[in-house]
Amino acid sequence: MKNNDVPSTATLPEAGPPTTREHFAQWRQAQDIRQRTRLGGFFYLVAWCLCWGFASRPGMHWAAGLMVTALFALLLLLRLLHRLPRQADVDVLRRWALVHWNLLLATALSWGLASSWVLATPDFGNARLVAVVSTVAFATAMVFTFAMNRPLALLGVAFLSLPGIAALAWHDAQALPVVLTLVGHLAFLVLALRRGHAEYHAHTAMAFELLDQRERFRALSRTDGLTQLGNRLHFNQVLPEMAHQAQRSGQPLSLAMFDIDWFKRINDTHGHAAGDACLIAFSGWLRTAFAGPGDVLVRLGGEEFGVLMPGTTAAEAWQRAEAFRHQVSLTPVAWRDRHIAVTTSGGVGTYGVAIDGEPEHLVQRVDRALYTAKARGRNQVTQALGDALPPQSDLPFWAS
Ligand SMILES: Nc1nc2c(ncn2[C@@H]2O[C@H](COP(=O)(O)OP(=O)(O)OP(=O)(O)O)[C@@H](O)[C@H]2O)c(=O)[nH]1
Image (cartoon, rainbow, N blue to C red; front, side, top):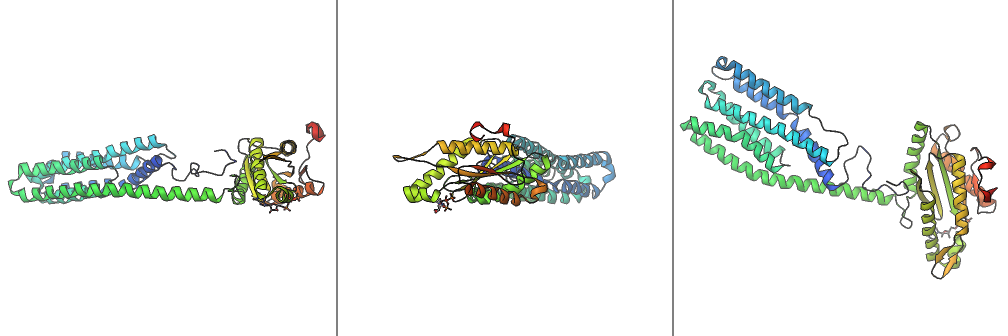
């Protein structure tokens, strides 16, 4: 971002949600998957332990049972350990989601195979009911929790349900009503997934619209409509941040304030539209003259402008302001068939914790310097009291 523009929708704070539609959708999906996957792994482990523990002859299958327990414990651990990357771009998020989906599908397939073993093995006795009920619960949860990715959720449901249904149909002729009920439930889940998927993405799109509009309004509320520079609200927000940053980094932070001289006279002589043209031209000159990295330009109100220059010493700031003033005095504003001569007065100051304390004090010092420049006859730049004056050798030739 160029700092002389107010923050756009593409420049949210680091911790905020992404600001492009695709990035936001991917970010939100990853967040939802991460949040919704937390408890899932526990349920599979618990359901398996119930099946195994309530088998009528559990001792017969201790080795296999233990291995399945270890498998679900491992999958649970992997799901918990697979954390979301911070500040990730779209591709990183997409890859993360894919890896996590693989863990979810591996868990679903493991459950499908384990439950089919339970259902096909008479030793498990009443635990077979636990397996059927758990399968129904897991498949339903898969549809309602992970509807964001329809094909993968469908695959998960198939992994969870089909092995058990096949085992029941194959090994137990009396289970036909149960099999039919499970197939009916499966059909309901497919339909529910279709609707849930559409609703999930509609909701995400709406959330993005709201966020985007909020950012647009925020940027608009901080932009001056005539010059498209930041406005005073923007200035009031960035000044303390930049002062704090300067304090932390030990780098200087300078402020220049400019006021167009005899602006009322320009309005009265050439009309309000000509005055507006001067303000627009003036802001364009500011953009050209103060295009340093991190420079922040604002229209403080009326015909008054401010420039925050991070990493700029008092002497450098004064030189830049003085060079700008000189350039303005040489460049008339072309408006219709006229050339309107414009001059500006300026005040310059550098933030110092010892002198200023609060950044607002720097504004007062620079404002006073600006009024001194006006009082001394205009078309000049004055250094704020408390700042070190630039050595004479550093002054440009026209100012010495
Ligand atoms: N065209 C135009 N005029 C504006 C705008 N905002 C403020 N003004 C005018 O700017 C003028 C400012 O006049 P003053 O505050 O008296 O200052 P000045 O005439 O520049 O005199 P000094 O600052 O003392 O040199 C007023 O006439 C305002 O109406 C604007 O957006 N467009």
